[in-house]
Length: 89
Length: 201
Ligand SMILES: [Zn+2]
Image (tube, rainbow over all chains, first blue to last red):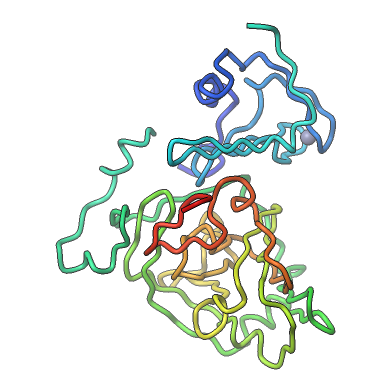
């Protein structure tokens, strides 16, 4: 399978984000720090075949989140997400 | 694909080769594709490789100039931080020593940069002294885009995320600046023999 065929949508990180935020996050609205586009997390682009999980903006392809999981810890870089809006659990 | 299944994807080698496989790694015979983003479309007519930063004048090669430089074919074992290792991989390219010929620099560190915005940081001593190459052939064939073609970096003694795909240059730096993965959990150095996978390893 090519890299493009392995490109997933944001539902692929639904489980991972539920582990981190302990609530369902695919309906959360993420604002791209690069272009300002607002997309539901379920609609973003996800690359999982990498040392970590890379989440990209569907409009401009810039990185929204990088999530690394190892040694019993998570590292979550959200510098590419200017805002994450979601309803109380 | 879950974490558990990864260990069963490749064939385990016999004991004879175990001295070549770092701790926590298993040997594969295929060549897994890892990507943190879309595969860049590269126009070779406009492609350049640049050495910049702590250098009087940046040095720059076009594609044609790069492939006209004296090349080397090297056979190396590679080790991915996602735990697969691949033995006896054959690459053709230009040694970083050749590119750094005559460069006078106060830099002790480097950032390797790529199309698509990927970066990774390496001490200058780890890419000179016959330890790193800028490669454009794998296994006797032009390097395919999914494996980083037309040109990728190769620094096989460190985890393979340091061998940046779609490489466009080397930035010489006085300080060590973390790259794409090194700034979010992955180790600044990444020695597979010491299992330096994450921060604090
Ligand atoms: Zn964007």
